[in-house]
Amino acid sequence: MEVSTSGMNSETSEKLVYLHQDEINRSSTYLYLKRAMDIVGALCGIILLSPIFLIVAIAIKIEDPKGAIFFKQTRVGKKEKAFKMYKFRSMVTDAEERLAELRHKNEVSGAMFKMKDDPRITKIGKFIRKTSIDELPQLINVLKGEMSLVGPRPPLVNEVEIYTRYQKQRLLVTPGCTGLWQATVRNSVGFEEMVELDLEYIKNRSLIYDIHLILKTVCMIFKRNDAY
Image 1 (cartoon, helix red, strand yellow):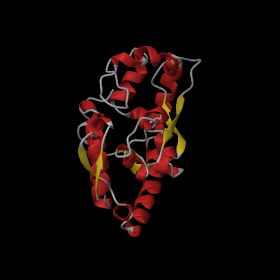
Image 2 (cartoon, helix red, strand yellow):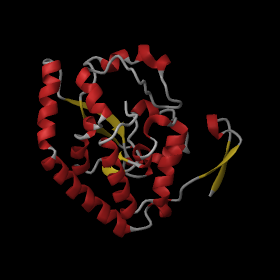
Image 3 (cartoon, rainbow, N blue to C red):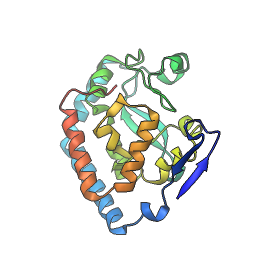
Image 4 (spheres, one colour):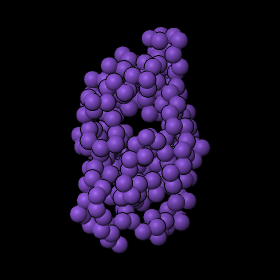
């Protein structure tokens, strides 16, 4: 279905193609198998990667003994439902408070904040972000059903507040630890391009596609990339 919009940033004077709900949930078998893969994958990941969890936890504590190991942040998931997303802490403890003074240095367009040389990132934080190790605790979110292994990244509450109706389509499915843009272009594109890649994934998602993106993500972890 095509809907004409106006007065909404990039949507001005454009005809945007919106997703149909029946397209999104067209296969109950796929959704069942996807959830099964999430549970098995998350359990195996937590067990196999537990030595890395321990090493990273110790490293974080050595650098900042008073800081927490994990960072919990409110994110927006499927159907705009908020949840607490887990990460290894990669920033100083007052990172959220210092964000306001860095807003003008944002290096990506749109609702997200990204800064390559963010002064809030710790030494161990730079490494675990570069290798995406900081994302591993999200396997807990996957087990809880708040996230999937593959899907659009869950945005912050303040980001969703300025989303257009078109951009909110990212929230029609369960968010993921990785997805199409993370497994391909990563931070080399702006917010609008990221939205288009997420919608492309939603329209074409399948079990084979999910496995393909998981494998691509694993490969990217073991080579140099532009994560920050």
